Image 1 (cartoon, rainbow, N blue to C red):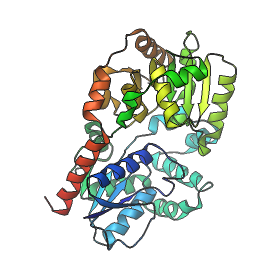
Image 2: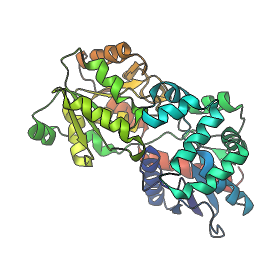
Image 3: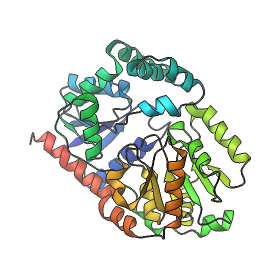
Image 4: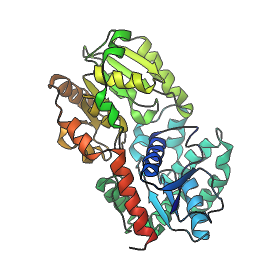
Length: 370
């Protein structure tokens, strides 16, 4: 059995949560003896592959062409949707030129095609997918893929329910939860504490993009005495937003902004923090929440998306549009004693080994027409 994993053309050039998911799934599938390759091409010769595994329906213009290519060559297709509904972010959370374009776009299809068009200024590989999406329609591409693939692998039941609600689809599926690297459970605070003379602070690990809602988090904590540490990578398409964060952080001695922190430094930061917060406009899970929980943080998560299926009642939840809600959740988490309950739950349920095992089972199910 040989599998081809396929995703967006800039998967490795602009890494995100889906990049981690694909690379880690691939790594652990190989440990289970699965032969596979990863590709970001829109079309290619698939004769040596038994199955194509696509990722990401939130940005379907490339996925759609990859799906058509696989069907043309009579290959079974599995999809890990990583589906997110960005309607609220588009309405309330955008900054700069993106905010302007989202306001003048008249409907969801127009908004999404506008996003695809804007990406073309930064990546000319997007032109063919853009033209195709312009002809077919953003939502129609999503619906066709979701209804037609052989099997869906959502990361949660909540994700599947949301896709059924948004698209009216009915297709076979198998939930395959996201994983996390278990070595975050061994994190020690010493490196971070010695370097920055900080501990028991509030931490937010997230790329500097407006969907992560850093500015509302900053506003929420302004009236508190809490130190906020922001760790992330600047995003090319969100330069204006990052500059706003830097400007605010420079004026507040209770904010420490760190860019491009390597894994060992990140592990130490988690271990040194008291609370980790993702007040995002949407999270399918929040990989940083899982990492933070493993490292011993009390975790605050957005109530938008599917994080509750992962973190259950072992985290605090906030409304990303309401700074009072964010502040209240962070203060409750900060004032509550640390507990190993979430850490133990993550250790038991969300390893990449389990993700790979479940994915392998799905491959055999489709290939053997079970």
